[in-house]
Length: 73
Image 1: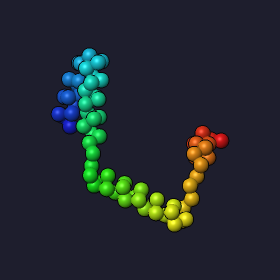
Image 2: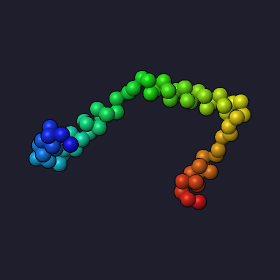
Image 3: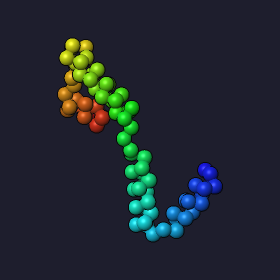
Image 4: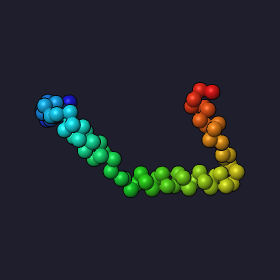
């Protein structure tokens, strides 16, 4: 951690809990900015998967089956 980061951290700890929460929200929001290149990659992936499904290369799985897998059933 850089000295600047350590200083900011120490200053942030002096804020009230609600001020710290607002600061954290602002920092997290700044990390969630759209990235056009990533959006294009995801769009291509979705189009490729849909095309594979329509060709019969992949099959759909019922939602309940997927949920059961992650519920450990």
